Image 1: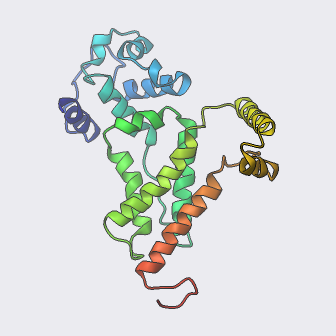
Image 2: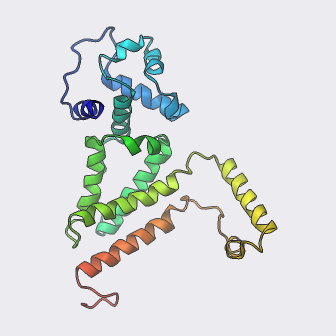
Length: 241
């Protein structure tokens, strides 16, 4: 519990920062950004208080004046990496184009910081993360959904992006090798997997510019649109229910 309280205090500026560091050039923001650079290059497992301190040529104890431990450091990394939320208000066409752009930007972020997916599962949400959620909920507000429906709809969109983003770490060569292996296995065992074999013959697991995001995202948004129509008493034919 104390750890999460420390994270909240640091994320929301509720904790006093040291008036001076042990050596010039050390700051909380610098520590966090150095940790992000390590995670981007080598993965989250490479991040440690000792490793980050070494980037500055300081002792590990020097960092504890700024952040209590690795757990709090990761919370700060998450919110700093996310950055300020996008402004969706200028996107024309209503909630659907707004959420599409939100999802696309989220997808791009996951590509830039693959380590985020695992780290955020246990993190404490900071102002930047909540700002992104605020923008998406605001895009859906005023269309008939209320309370938990608004949040769950946004989480469904985010979940679709996250479900595909887990494969981002694979290189194009690794993807091609995986696809070739799948085709070979199914060709040799087509009698056991006739539906999959037929789907692959029709192009399944083929090249996809957006990693499959477009198709799945559109289906999630279709479902949200159906719910909005139901909430507003509109039938699929356009008339009132």
